[in-house]
Every structure is written in structure tokens, then in C-alpha cells.
Length: 86
Length: 183
Image 1 (cartoon, rainbow over the protein chains, first blue to last red):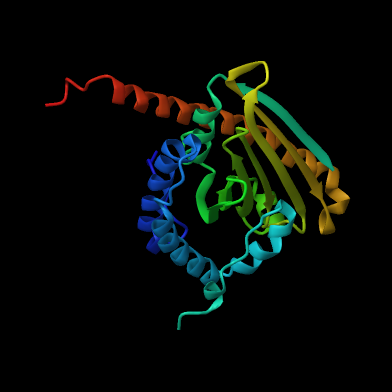
Image 2 (image 1 turned 90 degrees about the vertical axis):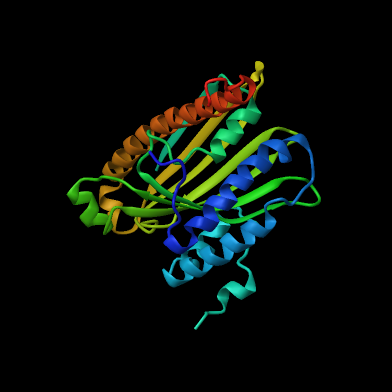
């Protein structure tokens, strides 16, 4: 069994792995110990940008937006994710 | 409609189990969970609560009849979670997005310290399965079948989490014990 999970879009896998490993470390070392820090924010932005574009391409973005209210999610997609790269 | 409810005690502290939950996939027990993507994540500046939205892709071996009925074996689930580090609670809510016009599965999960033993973690799970639309005539059968599958998945999910906890503990041990065998 692989150590890491690949992204739905191959192009995002590297960004995902970098973010996931940063997050796991931040979660136990900083977050749970009450230390404020944004160690992984940049890595997340890069991964998220790639991912949201991929989901849009695969036609999943609308389905996700529609399902949000059912799970009480506070999030909405950033405006720039709606702009198609052509 | 069918309800699935379960509780379980993990004999590890909440911090370890909640970390294991983030690192849960991939594990040998749940090969049906193919992708887990973080769509959004932030810390609420007012409450200090970590909020996360994830997309989960599941591909499961199902009987041909079911595959035909549902039009495939790949499904997507959306999950929203909150972690309050001060209260030591992790709660997750999820909903299937694929086939949801035929069968809706809404799940709620919580990890909290065990009230009877603070060094253990209490896991609470409840799910509501509801067949609708074209499947109404077969609602009971479909719900029963999915309830059974849900129960099996819940079981391997717990085994998977235990496996990840063991891995985390082994990593911590390796950091404490000097690695004299390394050349």
C-alpha cells in the first residue's frame, strides 16, 4: 500500500503530497498545542488552485456546491476558480 | 429509511486518534477509498476551530445488477469537519453526491475523549440511509443492502484507523530510540 494517496488529477499529486505532509506536521506540532502559525498556507493555495481547476474540468464543481448545505459547510468556492483558463 | 449507529473506544488519546484520522488514507483495510482531496481548510480566527471540507472518491466492487441500477461503481462524498483543540472534539458530517437521487447517505462522526477514561477516545457514528425516486418500490431491499455494506465499511474503517495509529506510535518510538543500526 502506498504511503500517500494520489490526487484525482495527476497534475496535482505533487502539490497534494507536499501539502498533506506539511498539514500533518502542523496539526500535531502547532495546532493541537495552541500555537498559531500558517506554515502550510502557501502550499495549500497551490494545491487548491490545481485541484479546483481539475474538478471544474471534470464537471464536479457544481455537484459539490449543491451538496454543501446538507453537511453544514461554511465554505464557498473562491471567485477566481470560476474563471476558466482558456 | 434505515439508521446505522455505532460507538467504539479507541485505546489511545484524542490527539493521536484525531491525527490518525487525518492520516487514515490510504490503509490496507479500506482499498475502496481511492482519493481524498482537501477542497477548503482554515482556522476560524474567532473560535480557533479548524474547518475542513474534503472530497472523497470511493470505488467499490458491487454486484453487476447494482452497478447497472446505479450506473457505475464510482461515487463521490462531500465531508465537512470541525476540530476544536481546546474542547478536544472532532466532528465530521458527510453526504453522498453520486446516486443521491436514488439513495441518500448522510453520516455524522465525532471523536471526543472518553468521559470514563481521558486517555482513551470515544468514537460515535450515526448514518441515515434513505432510498428514493425510482427505487422507492425496492426501498427496503436497497436500504438493507446498503446498510450491510455500510456496516462492513464502518468495521474496516475502524481497523484502518487502528493501523494508522500503530504507525504513528511506531514513528514516535523511532524518534526516541537512537537508530544505532543505521550506518
